[in-house]
Length: 84
Image (cartoon, rainbow, N blue to C red; front, side, top):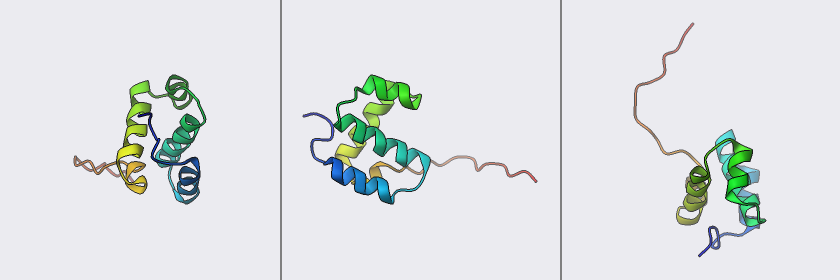
């Protein structure tokens, strides 16, 4: 099964219209481009990431609910320092 066989370009476009933030927007536009035949290697060059990152984005979009797949998971860790 190719990536994103379970989701249409129209669904991706609707999600893109509603999403906020740079990363979710990148993930959805990459998915739309993939559906339109752009190679993952080329997408990786466009976004300045490795090809396996594109693969991970597309896999998440295929296996997780759309709203959840485009957002980063919570990561625990040390809070950022705020400066004055």
